[in-house]
Amino acid sequence: MPTAVTTQSRHPWRATLRTAVAATIAALPLIPLAASEAGIDTVPAVAGVVAVTGAITRVMAIPGVDAWLRAYAPWLASAPRHEVPPGR
Image (cartoon, rainbow, N blue to C red; front, top):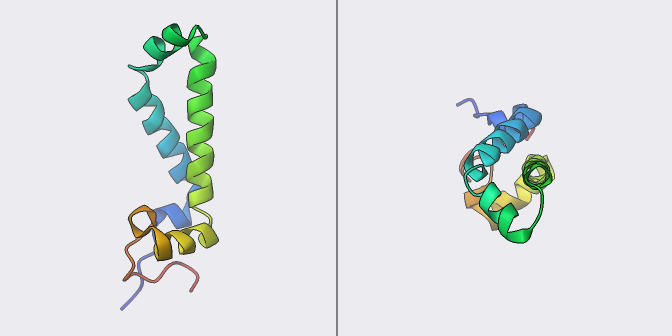
């Protein structure tokens, strides 16, 4: 049986971009309120959220990190435990 290769592992930057876009869209309704309460400008807040979200997603796409996630946090891994990860 051929093993499934996750799109996150095949295209990690695409997965990062998709997550960053999703996080931006999800956070948009709350960012002006949070920025107003904190007394900060909204644009840097949005940029910070997008940058951190993208960085975390990219790190999670690294094969070694994905292997660790499969062992200790399978709900965060790129594929279920029963699937063989790409390159193995």
